[in-house]
Image (cartoon, rainbow, N blue to C red; front, side, top):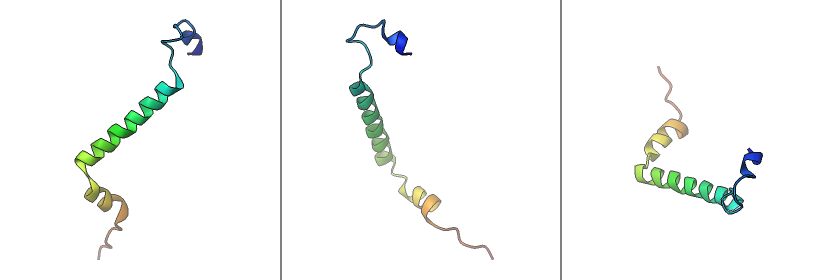
Amino acid sequence: MASMLKFLKPGLRVQPADIQSAALWGIAAGTTALWIVQPFDWIKKTFLEKPKPEK
């Protein structure tokens, strides 16, 4: 992969800032999606509450 990037002009190569920016935009998009949907009741029921014992 690195040898393929050497053929690109220095301005077109992937920079660490590009990777960081993509990661931050992904986190922002995921957070926004959760905020819009707000599945907190489902998360609470699925992960936090203990199931009631059956008799």
